[in-house]
Image (cartoon, rainbow, N blue to C red; front, side, top):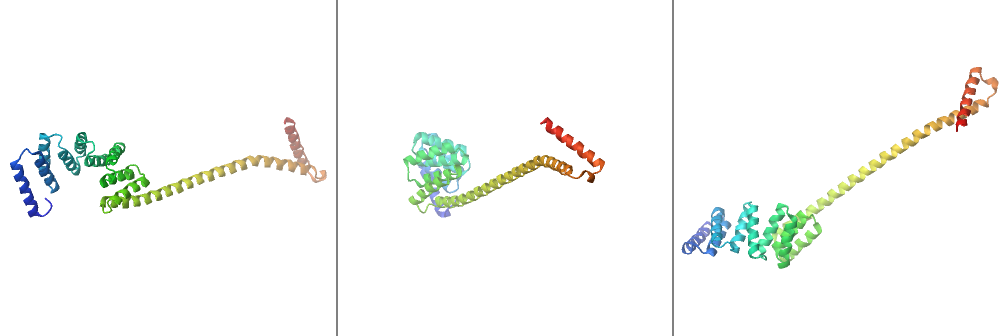
Length: 259
């Protein structure tokens, strides 16, 4: 068990004496169980919480503290069941609301967690733990950096020394900067990809236009050659050249006749 060995031993002896005198007193059972849980005696604590709830199934202290023990030992399903039972006894129990919302958030049930934490805030708007848990839900669950920052700052306004809120706000600020950097890099990559696509599309259009222009240019060159050749003196051309030019001009005329 943690703490000064002599003091812990003395306090434990006191609780054992009280329990020997009043073995069925639910407050003694719950108190002793909480003492054991606080000082590392989880097994004994669980035994006495169960005994307390056998006697009084609606003992609010035992329900909430036993749930905390279950949560601390990673038995989240059992913890949720105990918090739900506590809230049936007292729907406004702040420890049950805050811790239950926190567990739901860790399990990824953000909608239910937000409902529970908002219910807690309506009843306890300045409770530092509730504000901290809600701020963390907005940050890690909703990725709503602005609202999360506002809620965590509210928590620190009520208790500037609250370390969990201090640490959460610090980590949130770092996470926000990294998220903004990632978003900027993604935007730049998308822009570069679109520019690359536009460049390829433009290149294809130019090639297509060029290929369409080539036959027309060739035809124009042929017509120009025929025209130039027909203007040369007959004596400057051989019989074969004259025949070839005549055939070409006939083809050109026939082609024009078709159009």
